[in-house]
Length: 481
Image 1 (cartoon, helix red, strand yellow):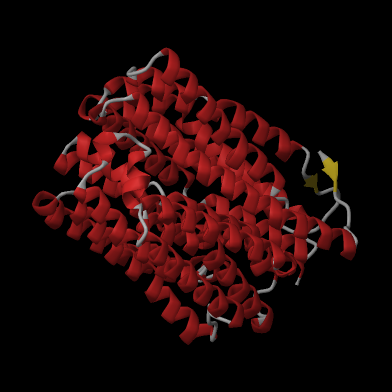
Image 2 (cartoon, rainbow, N blue to C red; image 1 turned 180 degrees about the vertical axis):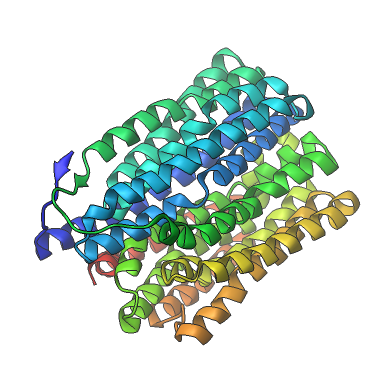
């Protein structure tokens, strides 16, 4: 490991600014890769087999989140806090608390998958996923340590780009050589977790460590912060993945495949918000108690989330059939189109609320966050159980839309009332207005046919990209201040 050094102000600024761009590039790669993964699976497998894959991997990701016990956010929080206080002697305590319990949890979740494998869509899939689940758990915690030192590079290179690109390449090979083979498809998706975990361990070995530094962190303090976050992180991922499992159970595996394809575009927005939130975690943690800085960070980050996601949501909602056709003719259905029309505007509202969960978590209000997402999950489950048997995947989309409103509007009110923070500044309102112009352009071009609509959409996205690049300096300033 490297010894602890003190960065100069200019070096820290340059590294932070570079991390911001790297983080967003990683989000773009992960979002695009996630869509490519779904596309390859949909093309290589029948809708029923694809539904089994999507249902099993969604359950895998949910169990991995449970096993992590919310420790990645705690690692970022505590390392950033102890660095600011020059108490890096606490690193050993942080690492011990962060790894012991999750390793036990990962083993328990893997055993759970194996025990109930016969109840899953495919028992073989359960065995494969159980084997790699501990790797997924450990890898995320290891990469969080780098983010605590304000180093986004390893997370982006290993998790966002490396693992995702490896999955795409392996799935492409399987689609050509073993088309229709569900087991081979699952192996191709799972294998990249091994090199990702090894590389993550290597990056942590190269991080600074304390030599004669003061500082400690009692387990009670670590887990008092982590406990609510652990539950919140599980509920958070359940909101993203449980609906796929419920659709598979209540409406069938084919419906689960169609629903997954129809909602896959959302991953782009989630990756953008997640990338900005991850990059800002150490900045927010280090500036708790400085309302002016936190307010500026919140407003500027919200503007960039809107700028990078709203044009995508608008474009896909206005070209739903074209989007669905990419995955095959089996997925061009009226209910799939309705799902897109419901969730695209819902995600736009969520994007306009910004990184409200990160603000709450880094301000130490993890219990608030837990209550918020618990309410949203309860609403989601109840509506799914009631609506899916009646109206299928449209019911699942309505349940997700309502739960998204709960998940974002409740904490938005808390952040405003408790801290006086608003997500919307002049820059954000400008981005919203420009998105309206983008929508008008698509509507006007659509009057002249599908080809004209596609051309109008492309021109709008290109113009939007030029504008965003023109304001790139404002994006860099988000991490420099």
